[in-house]
Image 1: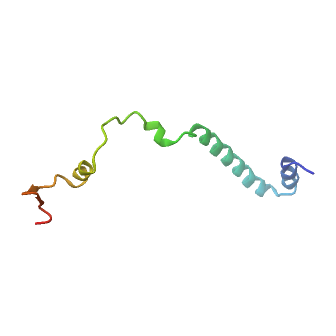
Image 2: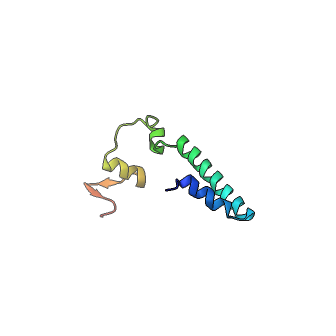
Image 3: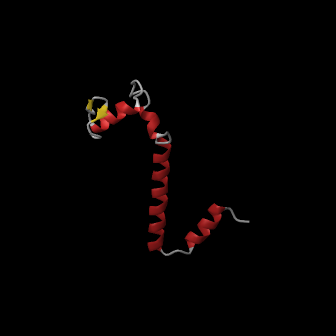
Length: 81
């Protein structure tokens, strides 16, 4: 049984020159993709770990950050009055 490389070489020998250029482009693309993958093999979130160090926020604090301070009057939210 032929190895994959041997099968590829046999198929390449029968291709016209114009198709060989396409094959070369594909091989070069795969090489570049592989090189980039090896450089970026870590989770992108791990690269920022340690940059942000703060106390956890409560759900009320998150709401305030997102929507601004809630005005409370006599124990009733302004939105409910």
